[in-house]
Length: 230
Image (cartoon, rainbow, N blue to C red):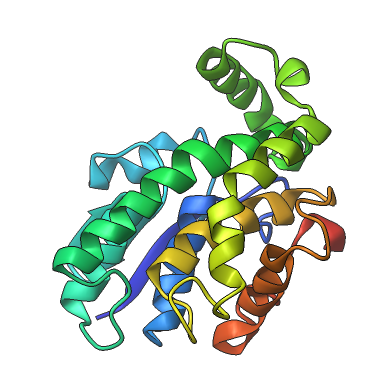
């Protein structure tokens, strides 16, 4: 069966920056699964009508359609149980907790660092939509939300437990990356892809971890097009 991933793109179709799509891309690489991507933009809702969903990622695997990045990762574990990403039972509960931590503590800090860079990276036809929806979500203009120095301080504080863990192991999941690593990396890669802003200090263990994550799975992330290449 052919696997297809509907993947958010920016002003250049090669620029793929969604944190949730990056979770899935890393999970697919972890399992050694081949797949094709279909570039998708924010307002192309009709293209996802078959999935009864209005955002990406959407994954199709033959006749199976799966939406939501975390549910896609769960599906991949069930359909392709070799090299599990999330696990089951207690392991799953722990990685689900980490998912909530990333989404509610790390991602908002990153958004504050790169908000205006993200707007510039989006296709011009999508910028008004992006501004309207995100300003409604934050209750403030993007210019007000965008505060890189404050965002870095917020991120540094949020990543304190991650930093401690990475002082003891190469990856969050041990000697090799897995689900927790991909959840955090998705958000970090999102910011790295659209902005040249420094996210963490070079001496931070998180910086070394991110460099390692770029290289894993034959450098699938390192080879990705970023704003630096455009």
